[in-house]
Length: 163
Image (cartoon, rainbow, N blue to C red; front, side):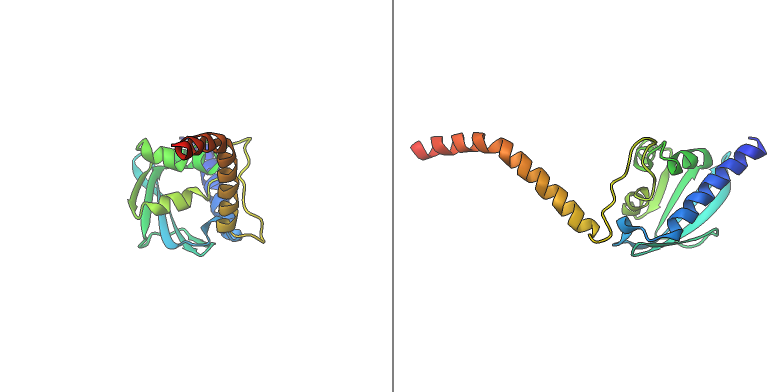
């Protein structure tokens, strides 16, 4: 691999970690854990990042350390993850991303990844928490499903009442 290609991947990774540590991450407001990311380069240990997530604040260090979860992958896949071209959960299911420790943290970490190019991620507004936003969406979905099902339920109820 050329030095320029290596530099490009390093820059993408560093930009990603700078971006997530610069501002609070509202989708992680309930997470308090440490995640270590080990990136291999041609089956050798490459870069290591240690992320300390504290209720939405992400602190990043480039050093090894103890962690609640460890994510192992190669640098090429990680580049695709941080640009939104790959999905962390899909990569884990396909065996391209390995996880040790608390598997729920892989889901939490995947929330930090950008959406695929051309798609937007919906993030709750600052005045609402993620739980309130999820509850609103769930309630709206339930109401629309209930409205479609109601005539069928009404017919069944009428038949039961007639018996």
